[in-house]
Length: 211
Ligand code: DX5
Ligand code: ZN
Image: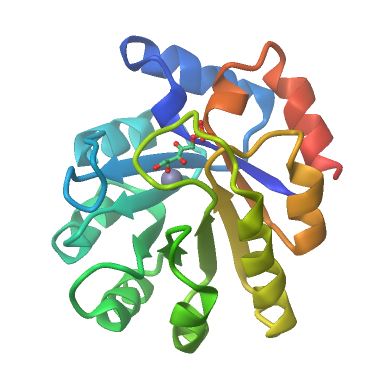
C-alpha cells in the first residue's frame, strides 16, 4: 500500500488548520512538513513552531523534511516539536552519518534525501543507517513543479540493490505518475498541489491506498 504524506507547503497559510484537517479527514497517513532555510534552497518556509502546533492539534505523524545546510542545529528542536521522522539531505556540508545516527538515537524515523542532480550511488554506503530514502522528483524549493520521470530509475536501482527500507518521492507526484512510482518500488507519496487542490482528496487517497 502506498502511503500519502500531503505537503503543507500547498496549504493556505491563513487556513492551515482547515486545510490540514481536510487531509486528515480524507485519510492521509503522514503530514509532510517542508522546512526551507533560504541557503540550501532559494526559498523560506516554516519553522519548528508550526511543527509543534501541528503536533499539538493532530495525531498524524509529522514527516519533517529539512532542506537546510545545517540541520544538525535543528534536529533536537524538531524532535522536541514532535516529529515522527526527520529527513536530511545528502548534499549538505557537515557530517551526514553523524546526523543520521543522532536522528536514530532520538528514536525517530531516519530519512535521507537526494536532489535530482545527485546520483543514487552517492548514498549507497549510508543505506544501512536509514529507514527512508526521499527521492526528490523536482528541484527542491517550490511546490507545483513538473515531475521528473528520470528519477524513477533511482527507485528501481535502490530496489535492485536489495534496499528494503521505505522509499518516498517528493515533487510533482500525482495520480498520473503514481502507477509508475508504485511499479518502481515506492512506499510513500509526498503530495502538495495534487492533494490540496484536489476536489475529492478522500477519493484520491482511496485510489492510492489500493494501488
Ligand atoms: C519542494 C517540496 C515539494 C513539495 C511538493 O521543495 O519539497 O516538492 O512541497 O509539492 P508538489 O506536490 O506541489 O510538487
Ligand atoms: Zn518535501
